[in-house]
Image (cartoon, rainbow, N blue to C red):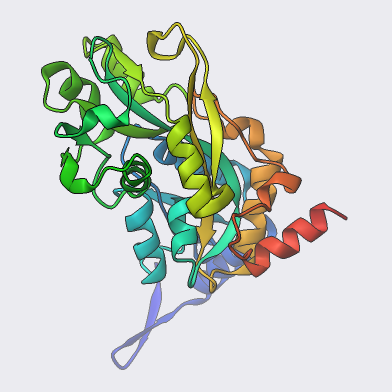
Length: 318
């Protein structure tokens, strides 16, 4: 490259100037520059769980859409940590279970309700444990610390008239659950997601314990009396994890949340992607209630919509 030097500064020559002008014209015609591609982290959860899988699918959908920004899923402990990261400005987007978000909604704004999570309490298939009352004095997992599963799990224990002192709580990651049930590290473990949860199915297929899910319909009634419709009746069908019977359990919505200062155009684009690419946002081999249409996304358990989301839903509704 030829340059002309004036004092200690290098001045571009005419050929350099023309090359730069041509490059600028090309970028203008193609409608993109490196500066225009914005990166936004989204608080997800541990690998193998629903939040992790969904955030990866959403990031891929954003990339396909050419929206002019990227989503970067961030591995976290789950809902409780995600809410903290969102409030302190570490991430502009996060996934969270609705019960924890509703418990302290200050500063939280919803992009939409995306899926129902199924709370699933597992014991070894040959366990003598038949209900939550049988867990008194036993070692259990309610999921990782700072997870939404643990938040809901403590409420479920209370609904069964158990306190954390009545059990020995041992936090486990999803990938550890089936092995821990098989070797007796824990007697029961709570996890959440669609059905089946991939990490649990993979664990049982790899030689972990065959599992059985506990019925949670009595605990659901108490939770609804205390906290309202944020907890819903849900059912795991026969055939999941090798079970030959249906199991009544508890459903709680998962929400996509955003900071109030995230640009409206970003949030609006996310709404459009959630609706238009719903079929591509279903985690592999996972079944459950999907809320990815404009009429269902807006039911956000009482949390206010982000202004960009509200505008997008108004547009979609005509």
